[in-house]
Amino acid sequence: MFMTIGLLLLGMISFFLAFIWYRKLTVIDSFIEPLSERLGEPDTSGKKQYTNCDSHRWVMKNVVYGSYLEKSEGFRNFMMNRTMTGTLILSIFLGLIPVIIVYILFQSYQMIGTSLVLIILSVFVIRGPGQLEVSNLLLNWQVEQKVDSLKIGDLAYARISQKSIKNWIRNLILIGILTFIAAPWGEEIPIGLAYVFTVFLGFAYSNIFQPLAVISMPLALMVFFIIGPLILILAGLSLRSMRKKIIKDEGMIL
Figure: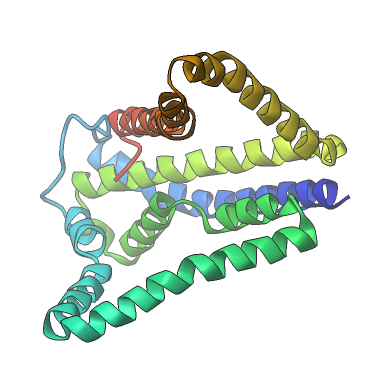
């Protein structure tokens, strides 16, 4: 029951957020279109760089050299000036974090079970990716500027931010549709995932671990518990980097 209700709620949240972002997008479109008529359409393929504009300077100031760098600089100065105290505090802090996180996750899983995954996904949907936040802040800043002071480079940044918001709206709609479709079978999803994982684990054990164990047990343990998961992680990171490269080539990121 929790999974079904959670999927329905996640779908409604996704559609609601898509509607909110769509309303923002209409305001953005009304701001960008007059600029496009006055300045022409910029090249957002990534082949041309627009550095001589206020938007580029805004990105450099607020994204590349943001306020978080000042915090990291303060932390580094603290560690240099008070090395012993800083090391002690840092070790205690880093030692407690995993324990607290595991305890919270364990207690949460006991209370709501696999619906915890939906809560984590809902937080991501509500918060949105970092790229979306940067795009929204940049567009808000551009709207506050004098229209006559904006150049073709500013329009390029606005177009890229506009595409970023459009992509997020599409993702929200897709998440909403998929969650509504999956909601009737919500309670069976964890069982199905567990079954798939068990079959995969059994296949790997029978076809990888056992043949290698005949040759060398340490080698089998290393492949099964270290090299195998490492390959899967690297494959996931490779797919992620390829996706980012494709998005960058299309001029979809700042």
